[in-house]
Length: 138
Image 1: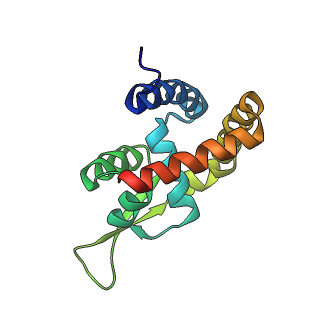
Image 2 (image 1 turned 90 degrees about the vertical axis):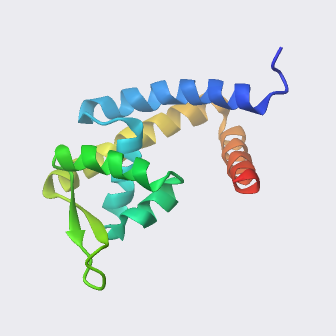
Image 3 (image 1 turned 30 degrees about the vertical axis):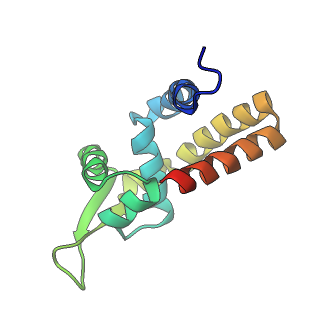
C-alpha cells in the first residue's frame, strides 16, 4: 500500500533503529539522542549548544532538553563562554570520559550488526543516500 511512500518507509525504519539504539544505550541509562549527543561532546568538547544542535540536526530547544538530561546524570557540564558570557559551551565530565570507550563499543556493535544484516555495500549506500536526501529536502 505504501511501497512508494518515503515518509512511511523512513518512519518504519526509524522505529526499528530506535529499538536497536535504545538497547545499546540502555546499560548507560541513556536514550539514543542522549547517547549520540554525548558521543559528539566527548569527541569535540567545548562546542556551544547551538553548534551541537546543528551537528545533530535538531532544534536548539531539543538540544537543551537532551543536555539537561545529560547534566542531570552528571555526564556533561555547561561552561560560560570566554568571548561571550551569554553563550554556554558543553564539556564532558570525568564520568562521561570513563564510559566513552564502552559507549563507542556499544555503538560500533549496533553498526556491525546492521552491516552484517544488510551487507557493507548496501549499508554504506543507504547511509549515503539518506544523507543526500536529508540535504536535498532540509
